[in-house]
Amino acid sequence: MSAPSGGPSLGIGQVGLGSITTAHRAGYRLYDQPVVAGYDPDPAARERLRVDTPTAVAHTDLADLLADPAVGVVDLATPHHRSTRLPVVERIAEAGKPFLVQKPMGMTYADALDLVRVAEAGGVTGMVNQNMCFTPSAIALTRALLVDRVVGEPSYAQLLVQYRFDLPDHPWFGKDERWWTVGLTVHHLGLLQLLFGPPETVYALTGHDVTQPGVTSDGWGHLALRYPSGLQLVLVSTGTYYGTEEVRHGNEAVWVQGSGGLVDWRPEGEVVISTRCDGGSRVERRSVPPHTSGTWFPHAFGLTMAHLRQALAAGRAPLCSVQDNLAVMAVLEATYRSSAERRVVALPEVMGDRYDPAYGTGWSHGFTDWEPPTPVAPAADVGALA
Image (cartoon, rainbow, N blue to C red):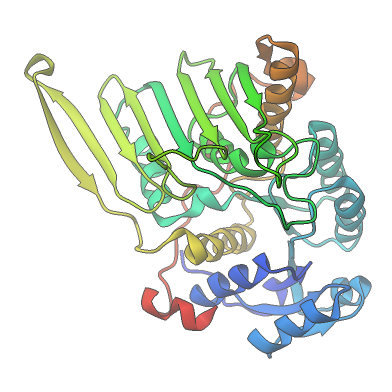
């Protein structure tokens, strides 16, 4: 299925025009996703929109953007805090507009649940911008594991990211009570939800490096997850590593093993499948190229919005819906609870009757037969588009 034509009913209105939204717009232009309007209380932010997207209307009031008949989808990029996000979602829902909201949905599970309830009460579709799921190579990984079943039933998975990430000059990144897991590892948890669904239990270690002045809360978090299917998964993630073996965000080392084989994957690399032969003495390797070529920035931003607009045009629930993403928020909540209380936390303890042990993968709860569009410009032109 091709992307919607970009008519007024599906025009994109950006709410919050901070610096990350310039990457959004670069990705949207790359995949012909039309930004028709934007709103931010900061005049400098509105001027950025006018400069890079002169065809878009820069509104000075949120009410004007929500009343704009050209805006059919809201790209919500306000900070994650409840005080700045929930009131805006309430107004978006009152206006009856579907929306794409930045991850994490909130800083706590309770905050995220309130956002979902607002969307449900307003009868509007919400999708979380888990853009790691929409990197071109992640699309290939998802189809290799869930459509082609190249490893059979997954039994063990591992993810590693380790590098130094300090933010001495940022006003609130790294300064909240929660930071690394809710702010960075949320990317990985979104992908794991898509591939494997909600875990059953979480055991976590989190910590803080006092030598990093820009991070005053957790700077690393390591998780052990157990799933209803029997899958066990270890996630090692730190922003406090300053050694010689960096594995940076964007180059995570991920592997998934099952009864039929093993997959190695990196967000901007290929999906590599290894199969045991002759009783395990040899390993055959073959590469599965990404569905489309491209990098995380800005391709994943464009593909995320393209997916949402295609789902809306088809009358289907998108992948990474706000309801589906509650499981991600529950893992985040369980992580901090587990670390603080030094115990295993079961997800039903966090989610209550929203937890379903038979839920399955996030992939099975969204628009899986969508066809990712190809870029309208070569990858080499992305810099000019940004």
